[in-house]
Image (spheres, rainbow, N blue to C red):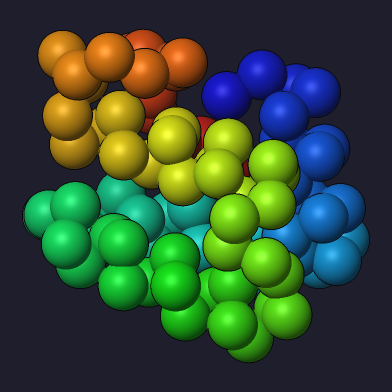
Length: 83
């Protein structure tokens, strides 16, 4: 994830709660499947009152998806989450 994306996600998805953002990313590193990660993303978007079909939510979801399916066509590859 680029620095620009990090600030975008922090602002729009986590409402500038950096510790929550870092904990969320660290938590994703412990999730074994896309199915589990997808459920966690759905919960995040609901809790943070974010439209899951908004540009920023779709971009974040793409990054997470590519962690599990790096060979699929997508915008971002080689994703490793760092808090």
